[in-house]
Length: 141
Image (cartoon, rainbow, N blue to C red):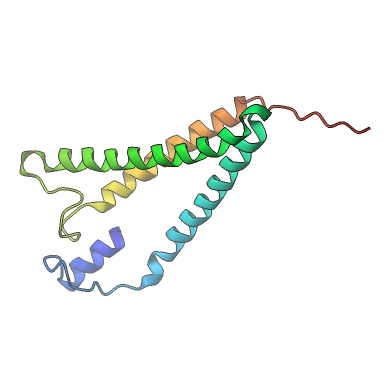
């Protein structure tokens, strides 16, 4: 986003929200590949975890929990955007999500998301290290 804002500034199209910023599409490919891979691993990992670690009586509940996690994430995301929008507009300021993206600050939002993701990674590492996995009993006879 910082690269896009710089390109918009250099091209003089900051106040033209409908103008095309002269920038290659390839600048956004790495982040979307990384996000896509992370999403796939998270989805598969959650499904496997809920299926493998749920008691037999509650196996059908595993899918519901998996989908509930995705739903709660969507609500938290919407709440975060609403709070940031109202806080940054306060006092006549420009919202991070301004109608003119060249005047907004999506770059700040992406830095915030990166920081939250780092905290989530630390929480994941802690919980994955301290979680005691349910052992499967395999009858060999």
